[in-house]
Image 1 (tube, one colour):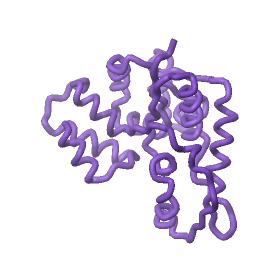
Image 2 (image 1 turned 180 degrees about the vertical axis):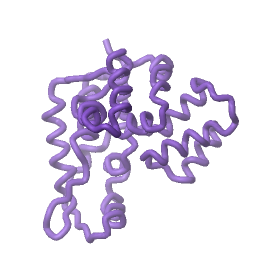
Image 3 (image 1 turned 90 degrees about the vertical axis):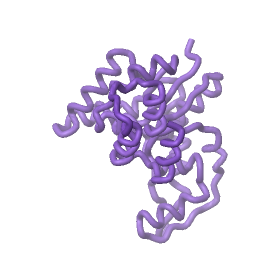
Image 4 (image 1 turned 135 degrees about the horizontal axis):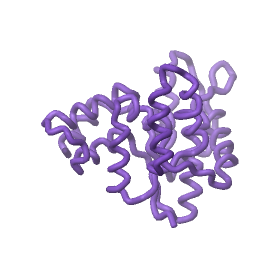
Length: 222
């Protein structure tokens, strides 16, 4: 029976794939001693659609290989689709511009939240690996999301009354924390003192939302 799991969003897998470090997940899973899960929505984002695009086909094949080898596991958990829709409806209807709702998240990352909730109710310890900032802010700093998106989108945004309790109990990690663990456990066989710095900046440039200050703090831990 599954005891603990990391649920991978597309953003984290894409960061690993684009940096050529997907193989780290093989050894990370052994250290973690738990399951690495993806949802059907995430599979569509990292394998099915990219497989039809020449530019991204190689990365898709590499992720498919991890799935074939059992490093990643595809989960068709009952109720994920229904819970995904429920969370999407809340997330994509509380911010508006010119009277129209703004779509801020997609089914891929929200399906990870849905699966996390279902696993938690079964007392299966889990975290979600997600680099995408908006969904992380929904979970960690929902009160600051409107101002962040106003600056990003250069439009005036209003927010309605919403129950943010739906986002309250999720645990999030990023590719930055995963590469830190891999470095700490000496899973990456490059014997250079600059390795951790290189890894953190690499995942940042491929989409991981991590600040200069956070990079400095992680390096202090290393």
